[in-house]
Amino acid sequence: MPKVKIEKKSRIHNEVAKQGIQFNKDFGQHILKNPLIITSMLDKTGLRPTDVALEIGPGTGNMTIKMLDRVKKVIACEIDTRLVAELQKRVQGTPYQAKLQILVGDVLKTDLPFFDICVANIPYQISSPLVFKLLLHRPFFRCAVLMFQKEFAQRLVAKPGDKLYCRLSINTQLLARVDMLMKVGKNNFRPPPKVESSVVRIEPRNPPPPINFVEWDGLTRIAFVRKNKTLAAAFKHSTTMAVLEKNYRVHCSLHNKEIPEDFEIKQKVQDILTRAEADQMRARTMDCDDFMKLLHAFNSEGIHFA
Image 1 (cartoon, helix red, strand yellow):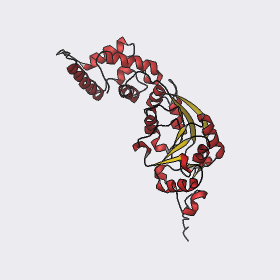
Image 2 (cartoon, helix red, strand yellow):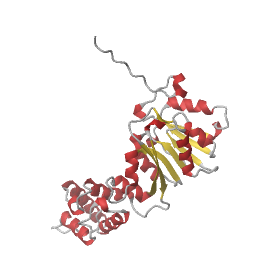
Image 3 (cartoon, helix red, strand yellow):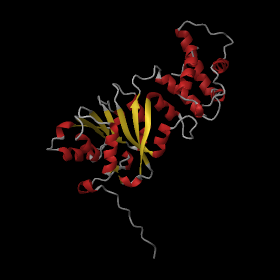
Image 4 (cartoon, one colour):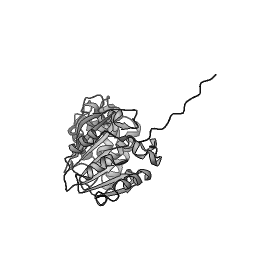
C-alpha cells in the first residue's frame, strides 16, 4: 500500500493563531521571538526618551512595544495589512496608542519622515536597496541597528583583501561606519528561516564625504565586475569604453572643448590609470581612499561615470 504524504502544517505564530494569520514568505516574514535579542538590539541603539524611532517590518509588535517604552514616538512601516491590524489592536486603549504611527506599504516606495534611529528585523530580500535608501535619507539619522542574513552582514563589514569584500562593502563604508554586533540563530525566529542571521550597527558619516555618489557607484561597478583582475583589464570591456566615450563627448560639448580626430578612449583611460599608478591595482585590495583618488583622476580629465 503506497505511503500517504502527510501535509505539512504551516507554522503560525501563537499570538496571531486565533485570527488565522499565516506568515507570508513572499514578504520574508520571520518574527523575532527571543526577548533577550530584542532587548539587546534596542540597547545597542542608545535610545533616548526624546527620540523618534523608525521600525521596518514590526510584525506583531514584539520589538515595537519595548521601543514605545523608551522613546517619544515610534514610526512603524509594515506592508502586510493583517499585521497592521494586529499591531493596532495591541496598542488600542493603552498609552502607547498616541506614540505609535503606522505607515502601511512597501518601505522601498515610501517617503520616510524624519527619525533619529532605525531598528529593524528586515525582510532579507530587500536588504541591499533598503541599506542605501537609509544611507541616502536626509536629514541624517543617528544610527540604525538592523538584522540581516549572516552572509549579507559579513559583506557589509568586509575589509579590503577579505574574501567577501565587494562593491556593497565599499559603497556602504564610504557613507557609514559599519560594525557587526551579534550572531542570531535560526531558532530565535518563528517560523525559523533557512539561513543564519546577524545584527549590524550602521552609523552614517555626517557630514558625508564630498563626492558624487552616482559617479562613485559607476566607478566601483566597473572595478568590481572582475575584482581579482587589474584595473587595466577591468576597463578594457567594449561596453564600458562605449559608455565612457559617450560621457566624455558630452562633457567636451558642454565645456566647449575640441576632441582630436585621432582620439581613442582606450588610450585616454589607460593614460589616466598609469598616471594615477592604478593600472596594476585590483578592486579587491582597494580602500575608499584609493577609489576617491582614482575618481578624482578620471573626473579631472573629463571622464565621468554618471
